[in-house]
Image 1 (cartoon, rainbow, N blue to C red):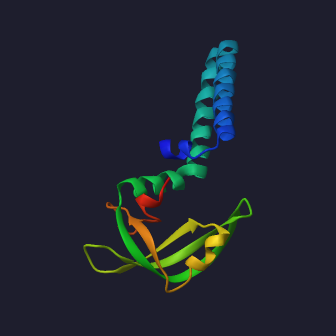
Image 2: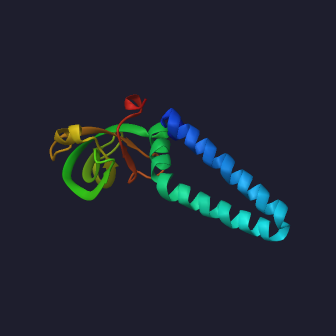
Length: 151
């Protein structure tokens, strides 16, 4: 979570902090005006905000956790498929079928999705070898990239 916040621009950090302050102030006013209804509304709103946060940022939080605690390895790209999703018209999401080559064990196949920069498309072609980080608790979960590559 901390890594996600660090990667935000200053404007995004200010906006996020402003939204949090506005949310808390609004909930305080509702609780003061109608204590019982205010607590119900605050509880429902908090649950809704947490759900939305997890829906939009949960994958990135899990990816950061894998990169922080996982085992670095190499993987051979077997297939590349576009998911049809693009972020900011620059970062297409792709689905990769990989053959992971862990340091301690037999190679195995795994599917994963990742966002890439359009300039990096030539690197993500079948037959190419890329760095991955494997979740130590579930080897079927991988994050494209290595700890050393993170800023």
